[in-house]
Length: 103
Image (cartoon, rainbow, N blue to C red; front, side, top):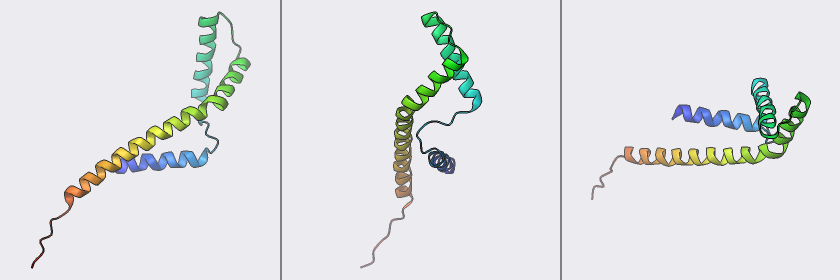
């Protein structure tokens, strides 16, 4: 359970650092996505997409579409957290001791 709490804290730190709603991707991930865009354009459209064009397209996708994906990811994380809290509550109820009342 502590590991899950740490993951939630990491998510909270990520959200606080990134109020724009756009993902913070490493340089390596960005480069890999740009390569995939170039490959897609060549295989699907038969067009060479240069580095500047691919970077512009990447920036457009991140700016316009990433907030939707980001919000869905937050919803998924919220649902996971709620299920885990329900499970934790059930486990805590099991630990309760029965109290006998003397009359």
